[in-house]
Length: 483
Image (cartoon, rainbow, N blue to C red; front, side, top):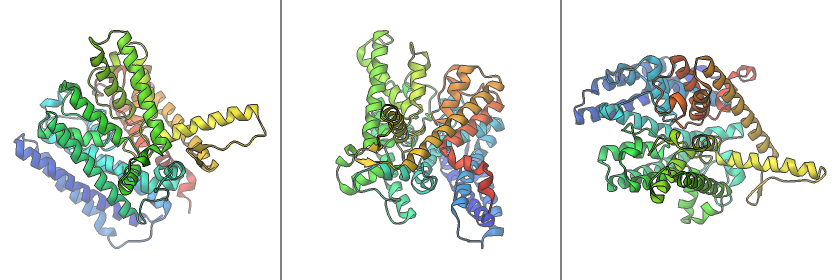
């Protein structure tokens, strides 16, 4: 392990991250909201910490191995999440405890969207902007992680993408170098953010709200500048815009690149994960709409369709935006939406959850085992589209699913041990592990009343979910630390 090189990189990351404290300070200056000082202090503090860590190790530039990469990625999210909490701890409004400040920062950076705050619209604009900015930066980090790092584990973005995608993008990377890959993804990410901002503004949002909600939408984060979330605007047009960009952001970003490079949308419809994703979205929207219609939850069919489609897309893509209190919806709908968040977005997207392609492959593997019971000697290949998926990939996904289930159960039981009821513990674990945000029970509105010990456990769930379990879990194996 190249520890000194890792420490050098970590110092650089913290120093670079300190720059993100400057835009909120300018927002505070522009709105004269009095919240600029905490961000200026945070900038100086982060820069000092980064320089102090980097300087003694500045000359160590050894070649990094795969194990070093895993450690850097885990430290990237954990350390930047902790550093990102500094402005929340220094601010007087809101006044947050250490656990709450960490919870809010990690929730933002991992694009979970769970919050401990209430009266959000009365907070300083700088704080509101910073929360949205955290999610936006975290969303881009997720894309680069999925394309550049996770393939090393055999279950990550491009590894699966190579197995399931026909068309022009089939290699480990879209372009020969990871830096070029990241650059192209940045262009797409920036273009979508700009388009979403303009669309929100044209639909009636002011500039500040349009920027903040665009950041949270493209990152599939869910932080809003209002307690009522998207329901504040009471606008079907804004809801539709948000849905469209959530769906776009939940699609594999390398697939967007393939479509742009080939100048053809046919690339999407040749992709089996994309087709499965649309089918699942249509199914959940239809179910929600029919139940809301039959139970007369809303006064008209159009209103029921508006709420059903928005809430279904928002929860199933793990965004967590709301137009209404879905936890109060009738029958099985609240828990159904929580379960759909386990599927999440596509591999290589900003969405959370297991990812659509993994769920599809788990289903196909289950189907193959049923067929083998009937015809034990037959040979069945698992195919996505016309491509056979290697058994090694399928085995890795089963291992991922087992690890996912184990982490889920352990965190849920620990939450119950802290005093949370079973519904809150189950749904809060699902919401944080799937990077969804809103839960049911005591955490339906916010997480402010959750015990501090529970918040630390949920932070752990957020990081596990964002790093897709294995990237973090591998650090706890004795083999990882052996030379």
